[in-house]
Image 1 (cartoon, rainbow, N blue to C red):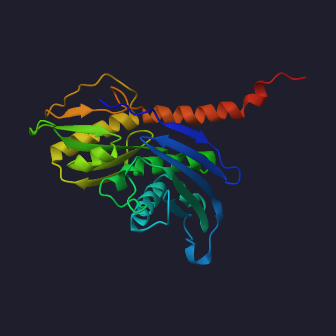
Image 2 (tube, rainbow, N blue to C red; image 1 turned 90 degrees about the vertical axis):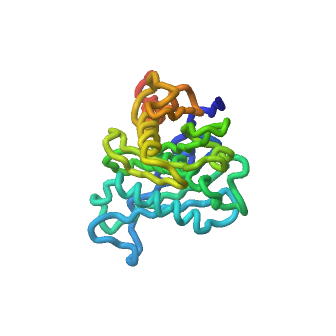
Length: 266
């Protein structure tokens, strides 16, 4: 079983943004900046709530239809968690720069390969949430996301397996790929995007595995589901604890910012 490094995040690496974050996981590195609430242009004003603007920039070249599609998905998801009603006629802007991606992800410098377009989505969403936290923009909840792929068995049998944080090779072989995001409390599914063919029982397994990774601490889990589907987790035996990772990242930043209180007085 391939092992993928645990997520890594750095808060506030950009000095001129209201908030920023660099997030690395599963071969992707994203730098995000968040600014707002700021005055919106008249054509973008909403008298009832803030407008959320998301910009995705590829690692090389200029963005195309794939980036515009990702921006639309992220904008709708962030609109759900930001308290936009508190800032009418304002703008909250999130810019996401892809710094690096797994080998062979980019074709003609864009995210236009089936399955791989979804693979970058969790990293984009996670870096956006961290940048919003860094900017102290009020949110009703945070979000954690994970990507999953359903792969056929290597021996050609009907058995399938679920792989988390799938690689480009996994995406090229997968029957279907999925990205799911949950609220911090785990009571709300904020995002569900899928590509490929899958049954309802396979979808139920994907949902259960995604919720375990995003919302629960690592616990002992079976390698085979009740329906006979093998679970292959790339990061560890029980998968990464995304909610714990997000909490520890913010807590570490707060502790660093409050070091002056514990410093001895001269």
